[in-house]
Length: 232
Image 1 (cartoon, rainbow, N blue to C red):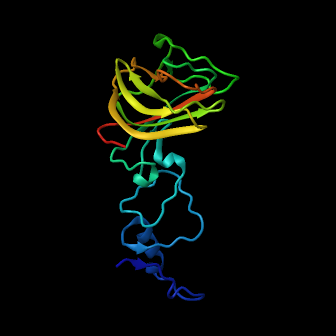
Image 2: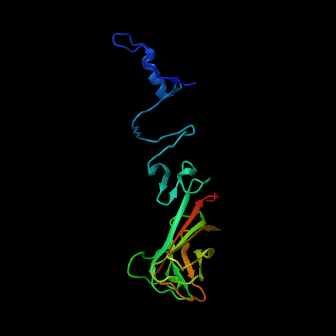
Image 3: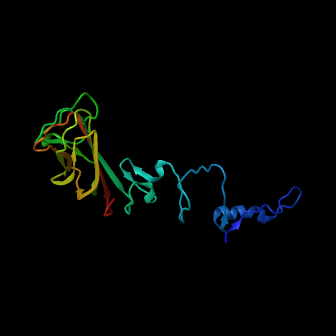
């Protein structure tokens, strides 16, 4: 059982004995085990190294668990939205702003397009769109896709989507545009980003026939992946 710091014998006009001083030195240098209880704030300059599990909640600043703007190094699974066995989680967001008049039986392409303005035009030429991600060795395996309709809601015919990375592609969840917001989150087939020259973009294939086409449509897609073999 650990010792407890004691004030026994420390009184005015009494002799201060060596152990009165050395108990504190032993406690804070780890020479002997002491139970320390702190009340108030604790400010630490420098790294915090934990050699045993934490009991209760450990709340830290963002810099404690985040190693870059697109990679999270989690202290434990509770620090991120999904339980991880890997130490490196990556996410990539692809989107476009309000597209006024999509037409049926058409393939549109987008990556990171403007989010604001009176309306945008999506290209039907895959060679005119795409981004390059500044990391390699990443496998994307989960997707969250949301579409909003700020104009006329369409009928329930579903659009289909594909993610392209380099020369490879995987299917994303299908969505309809018959309500203001539609979304889906699901696991997707693994697709890897192996080289820096791998162009990334999304294809949106509208239904062959729309009884009523939606107007003022936007999309937001978040891809989740890991560096290594773990899944999220």
